[in-house]
Image (cartoon, rainbow, N blue to C red):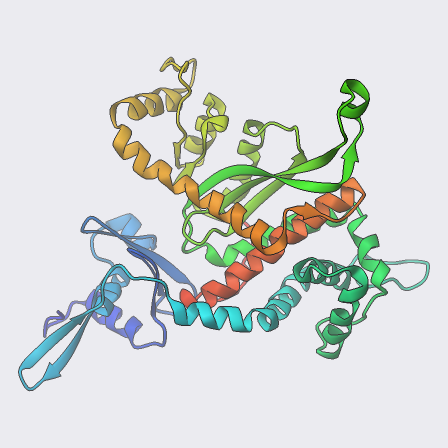
Length: 405
């Protein structure tokens, strides 16, 4: 309840609430609050009676900042009745937001094209000094991702390119074979990686905890080694996607694609370091495959806490890693508390399951470069669908920010 005599922070909190969609509920105990200027958002967390905000005022001073006050006023709306002032409390937990889900699903195709167009518009067009005019690079990437999203063949997807041209989302509708040629280009790979990271940046005020894991995608080509060496029946080749995803929205913040036999742990450092360029990392959870002193050191260096279980033969000897020493004894002495944090790792499995259910776990391309680019297109398409859902459920504004230098 707001007192009759208000402090300056209370007045500023009420001013924030006077705007439209000032407070949005993201998850149980998690909210986003628009800044008083209306530019940007701040993340509010509520757990066990404690409130936290990531605004500079709270970080420096602590206590009840104007964004926490605005959230609390939002949760306790005062109403004047004949019986006096009554408070209608909004619960901190809630069920499935079916209205938001239905809106996102029914408008996904239309919004997907618009958001994809905004993303590819950030791709710089390389200078062409000679030769026939080529298809603009943003148009090439747009059509490649659209074809992957539709899960249609190149010929059947061509009608989608013509419709995109009519809506002025691309400047040229390429021949259906052009998409396959685009996926064959090595220079497309870093562009797709960058677009995936950009597509995750609108979640910068929501995601601070991340989970890392890997999964395989089956190729349409076959490996001959086992057949020749061991006289086995032919087996499909595999590519492995190493993913770092947020645990609140399951957005993919970064990904590495390797061959199917590559180890998991060596990819951990690069994944979380690149994620830290766009996000403030609080926690990172991963399974036993990532248990190493180097990985614990990386998370500590980035200012976060690693929740990675220890193998049965592991010891608490630091061997130069204080992070390993502290994490090992915390794991041994506070197992229940550790497991509560480690449970967040299940969200990356949900992310992997969602990608495969929606876009399939088989890669249609024959060439290895094209297979990697096709897989990156799947993940980019998935990120855009997550963004569309959160636009309705969490009030996310799809503004693609820039990475930290």
